[in-house]
Length: 203
Image (cartoon, rainbow, N blue to C red; front, side):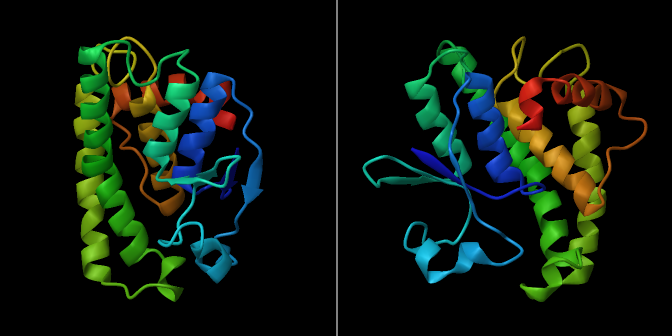
């Protein structure tokens, strides 16, 4: 199998790279340049009609799109260490936090990127007032997550999980887009230092 990948700062391919690195799985990479719009080519859309990265192509040609779906597939193949939980409660909690990070934090970051950043002005119709309004929403999301991290090492419990991977990629992409963590978000910043120090974060 091989991963159709896009380089940093693209957050979703990075989610899969970190996940695979935590599992000790060496995924061959096929680079797809977002800057060159290779993900929108007819050839690539034959593999993923939405024209998005990443996708995981299996040896028989079957394709899995969406980063969380790819990670769940890898979890089934390589259950250790478990990154989606060991039992029903842990799996539900990690799913809960994964969804929260995606909706509460990744949502405004993505809206700001699409509607207020000059990089995307060339490829989408921007509504800049709406885009800029997401600055405050992202800051509020950072502060919410900061409060939730008080007294805990990782987002969904005692162990590093898929929720931490998603949050790390989102926070780092937000910084690239111009949305930094608030200076007073001490718990969030301490968490970010911890997870960024893991070898997998460099994947």
